[in-house]
Image (cartoon, rainbow, N blue to C red):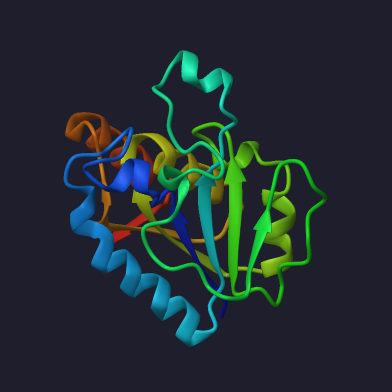
Length: 187
């Protein structure tokens, strides 16, 4: 059985208090996320890490403050990136990720499925199920969860490895997610 771990946007700008779009309390998730990622690597489970990768003049900055500008400190992941990581960028053809172990999936919107290569990455990995964690629960994590549910494979969100901005919005999203067959568990 192939479980794909899905680490959503755990970047400095979101996870740490000095970050440009800090999610209050997200820094408390870092040890759990590091443990989950290490578990994926040690068991040979694929890990997909979504990563905002904005240009300095990105149109998203009309709605959100500057954050996760490609190549800047705030764009970096808060946990280590595997030595054999493969980057799936928007601007290049989709690489073969089957032997990568760690896939860094760049995106420029709140929805990771706007990277046109994600469907091919999922096909290459031949997942039987997905385990999802990261930030922000009711924004980017939500988009990952609902997109992954469309694959027809089981999707589990780890409730102690996500952080929301609005608990009411997160609760509403979780009710929809579970109504569609998604599962909620703890890491």
